[in-house]
Length: 293
Image 1 (spheres, rainbow, N blue to C red):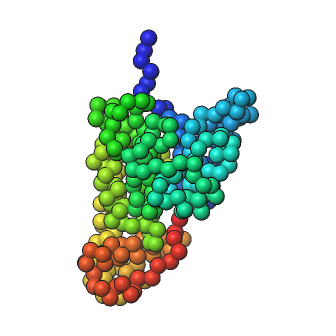
Image 2 (cartoon, rainbow, N blue to C red; image 1 turned 60 degrees about the vertical axis):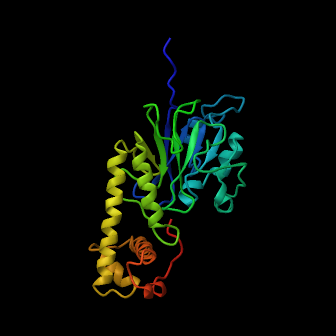
Image 3 (cartoon, rainbow, N blue to C red; image 1 turned 180 degrees about the vertical axis):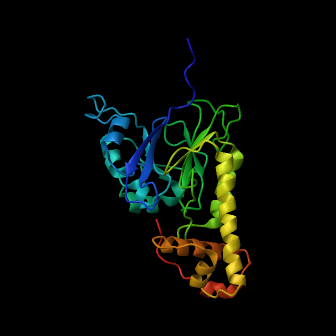
């Protein structure tokens, strides 16, 4: 008799939501009993988790043993409360961001986790990946049972590892890391952490799976450093406010994305200021807008 697959199967469900992501959907995932990012209630997600009347049994038992989100931006949390009621599963949040979680979801978490913890009774581990948002976390899919992984969910025994990476990475294009919610130093550190861990596949919050994590993480790091260089060049060329830095850093039409570009440039200026690479006068020039989500 063949040995059971030690790795939880992954189910991905695309959910139509109000999002700035080009694909127009957010991915919800189910693996090892953990439901990640239920952004909206749909028939497809009902069926995937086994809600009664949509493919579930009449006892009301579902495939969900816990519910968590990668971060609390609106396009990732819309149906947390509804699926908590439907499944009876505990809702689990990062211990350092409980108030933010409750404000976004309307739900007080039943349990909390920290970096490296298993999420509830599931075999999935939390991996802190701040940057896109301060509460951003990824979830590493490891073996069911046993401890054949490190704190990052990386393999120590050759077993494949996969990561629900939320808005840390995308297969094509880039991720918005914009002030005031985004922190570019944290974001670059998170990308490097994931790149070094050596995951076999990443499952992003938007778009298709990433089968070459090392290449994609490096591409996103390079993209951010290229944009940083453009912002710094704009400052060194005489830009004296955020608008001037935006104009100098982008050589394309920003129609429809001007707010994203501005938030991104502010995040870069904050990083450069913190590192002492632009003058202190910029502390009074950087104006923060509400979070871009």
